[in-house]
Image 1 (cartoon, rainbow, N blue to C red):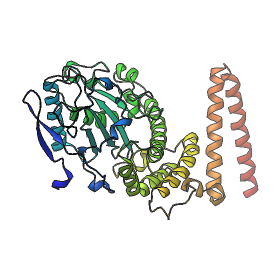
Image 2 (cartoon, one colour):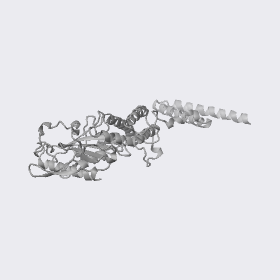
Image 3 (cartoon, rainbow, N blue to C red):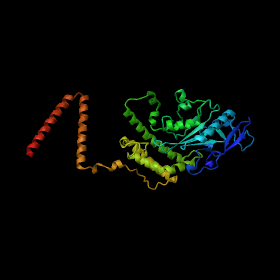
Length: 399
């Protein structure tokens, strides 16, 4: 819809250059469907931006365009840089995917804020992740600065609790020349898509720089187990981030955040239940391609943490107006429903026999390690002899 996009207005700057200035929205609509992917934020929304205080003294109290109602501009931002930033705005307005929302500030054209929706098939699914962006005064010679709203937790090897974003495209991590910032070709859109696809990905554990530097690693199953445990932690932190965003939303996004989680509350709570009861692999709720044998039981740590997180999420979703009447405060562990009390006599016998075999295997291995092989062999011969005697007696009585 035309009303969902920026309405540009031409302004001629002091050097005669024409730039596109977006008309700010006075009200953010209630539903995500009517929340434009790219727009100008309302006046004053920039005050909680991470980089707001940077170079604040470089801004004029009055507009250089000669009208108090016109946008102010930083003295550090030259006309060529301003023109380049406006080009970035146009690229974002035309090409942003449905899962990324960007706001710019007409009083601070060097600032931008983006919200990225966690993709399906990742432990970040249905979450919201906010990034504050700042254009340097020599942009695009230098890459933009990006700060993640972390709430003090590290949700990914590339996203530090301090808010630092570690990415080759931002020159904050080493990489091939083709992966680093290119003043002649790189864009903010590429940065946002890289964060969504390469950082907030399916297996974030393998983003760890130390692991990447090792290349292809042996002991595949060991590392997959470590990755699964990391994804459990990530999902817990993602759920906590949802609660923190609902309680302390970034300025200008409060209605959007509430509406986003109202629409997805049921899916998120269902996912918590599925992961708790081992009905789905962590991060893959609703993904049909995951086979049942690929789903491993969650750790005791995860089950303990998700119980409390689930209860708090339910409360916050209710406060946001979500329809979650069918959900209870107690997770249902379907794995515990089939308890030993429901086993048949035959099943109990098989389970005990398997346990006995397992114990004997462990004892034999210990015997080898401790140099007790001869003792173990003698014990086995004795056991075999006793078994033969018992079988003979049983045969005698039967006849």
